[in-house]
Image 1 (spheres, rainbow, N blue to C red):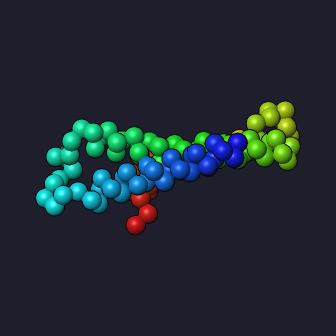
Image 2 (image 1 turned 180 degrees about the horizontal axis):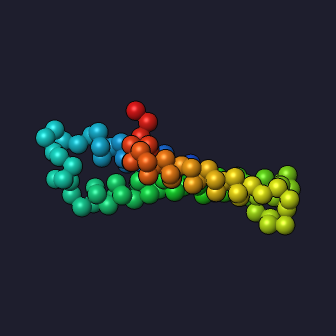
Length: 108
């Protein structure tokens, strides 16, 4: 599990590296719409990696808590229902994104 977490961290940092390179280190005068298809494909892939890998890492951390500390994150027969709390947080976040628009994802 630790090795997969390390692999996920390196994937996140690699994705951030590609995004920063494509956005900041373009030739002067080159607009985003003039970029080659390879750059657009790498930008899309890097965005997906940066957005989805932390979710998988969080799931792995919760799974390791289940294995080591005998918590009930993935055990439906366990008394404490943690999934209802995570679903509530997810619904709250998505409702705020619908209300405020995509600007809720950007911290400026």
